[in-house]
Length: 427
Image 1 (cartoon, one colour):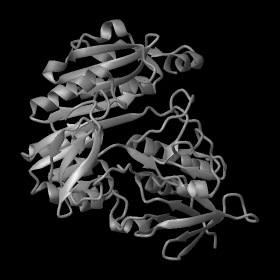
Image 2 (cartoon, one colour; image 1 turned 90 degrees about the vertical axis):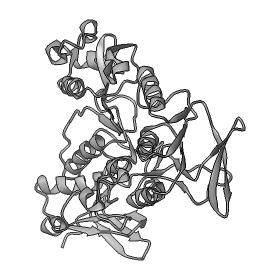
Image 3 (cartoon, one colour; image 1 turned 45 degrees about the vertical axis):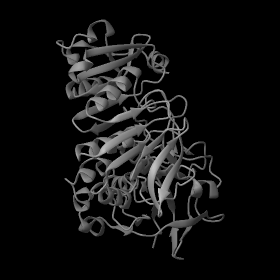
């Protein structure tokens, strides 16, 4: 009997690789190994609906319990793959993996979908009780329990996760302070107009936002956190701290295999690692720009996990399809719904559509008058129009895009005349 495909990582990308293999007609065995005790589930709601108490773990599961057996997918939960090696004499890509409990998992094909872990702060007092991170279900369950009795909440990090948790805590009536080391919020994800809008919007909702502020340590009593010290000497009272300062791709197994890693597992447009017989997908990877094919980017999103996993499955079956996918992201912070399509890096012009003071607006980003991306706040129609436009390789004229009374769909220019022009504009 064939050993089939081993997928290491019970993530959204891991499940999608398995599902796509079946959809593409693969009938060989599939083993999906996850470190958590739970079957694959949706992670984005952990900082939103789950934290707010409106969603339970069961509702977050991607598939029903019977799906895996019915699809011929062997699901192994609560097992961490600690070692993996490729065969020197067998078919390319074949080998054996070993779990921490000593279980051997032979394979003919290997996919790494190991995701990323929360970046930790190595500061004095960082091990005190009440200092939390949010990446997995158990993290969210712990945070939700602590939020129910907390008084003063300090969120370290003004990115998506930090601001989503801050919004949830404030909705529950907690005193909330956000501490961000950078000069603006969500600096890696949005432009300056959107950053400043969110700062003002959260302040209006009663959240204290501290920019250009670094944390130097934590204070505690009887093993529990009581305060956060900033580098300027200021001390913030806190009985609950959420640290959301980014993630670190899990590259240990890839490095063990000798695969090239550079802030993630390096893959090509077909999800192939530096050993083309091994694929990787999801938050653990860095890849060529999904539209231009240039440079390297790391995309932490549901869309990328699904799209890259679909490509990885096709590659494992020897189908090297060229697929362009438009990156998209979202962050729901209370009643503020941010939706992003495209990648704005390298833009030279921005067009603000609508009035940020109304909390319904969008910002379109351009390079050489060619549309790159959109940040839309409570304007889902604008977001969908730009996402579709970018997917068609088309653009929207910047000189008319600012008028919120004109539908963006009516301004679509059509596909670029040549591929090089699109790449130059979006580089």
